[in-house]
Length: 303
Length: 303
Image (tube, rainbow over all chains, first blue to last red; front, side, top):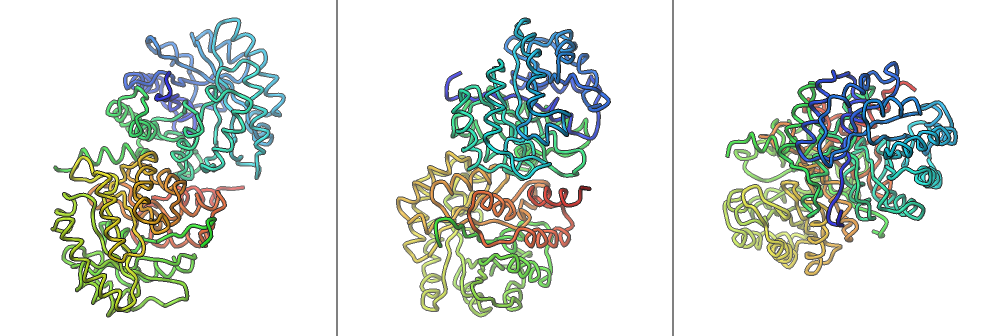
């Protein structure tokens, strides 16, 4: 990858759908992912091997992974909370998985029921076995710019968790602004702090648009040297308990942002808009992407 | 103003409401503006002296201006297309007006029915009379990063129009991304180009969020030295012919963006949210502000 390209990690079918109120059938999830691949996305979250009691939206992730067609250069990933999850992912043919830690002690306790250190210990055997099997592991760090349960998340804690996940063998660390509270100045500081311990080429930005700051935060991370960004088709995600709240930054916005600045993503915007229209219709809701809304109303307008 | 403060120009009651499908009565427009003043905004567009046949939403702007209470430090402005408009604004007690030119020849022809040069000539007597009367004039330049009717707007044309308006006596030049197509890299180039001819302290940024880029563009202009930004309560504006299309960047987003980066705006966010709720209810539509949506759903959530 040259410095005038950006890699997008499409998280709509996992981080996105997992935070939608509805649970979609396997066939719809598979069709969504295949449409996103057809649009040019090459790294896609396809599911999570977590308990369907807690996350019903991700039930049958093994079935989703088995049904997906393989394409050269395309990687499907799945979230695995522990060794059992990894085994299920391997059985479903996964060649890349992701682990999920938090930079906030309180969020770690409430979200995954253990301390940050316990979560990192739990990932040790996951990373060891993945390495044995030649499976790549991506590390997520959540709450990097704020936590829903505590006022402040010290930047030093973000740097420590990122460094430890990288040292354990995660090939890439995705820094997640889970509650979308970040602003560009703090994003720059965060990337600089993390890049002092982890190569900037191994950092990814994962921004939520809850406060409408995500595109500005992506640009700030880009200016600080980050070239990998997570995004979600149609801005899927939000929060099932907050009607109208916005979720992950929309993939459409990032493709537009980068294209207009001469950065290649390999994604075809019209095909992406079609994938977005497909999932909007399946969920029966309006797109959270302003690029999609603008381009659709432009296309519909009489000339 | 020190360098750690930003001045907001609230355009919701003019640029915002003028582009909403509904026409609101004078009493609602006055109450909106007074709520915005109570929230701390000090420069507010209150109306336009244009033909109500073309812009029914701005009918009775004289009445709006007459009814508004005066407050120390608060300036109400009105758009005036020509000398007749200026006379009407002066009669209504306006102490500041704005003139509106375009950087796009085609937009100028279709929007105000004359060439760019003709529009500038038409402003000469307006600026002369305003100077005589001690009335400040702000200059708008539209289409600075693209035009709805032509493919490209040369940056040299933007710089020329900005320079001429400034030379004629406009104290501030508001650079408007009318169609919201700009991205941060081009915004930086634009500000640098204009700042070579007009002092950067006399430049303002006016960004529309049609493609979700406005907050990122504001940050880019801020980084380039701009300290005055136009915004619209609740993101009012959009386009009456494009349902769902987004308009001016929401004032709530800018207050949040600046506050989180330690820049003072003098605006109280809770009071601003109430003003937004008032106008949303009057128009019967949901807020286009993500900050407003997020903070309202946060407040509504059980603890």
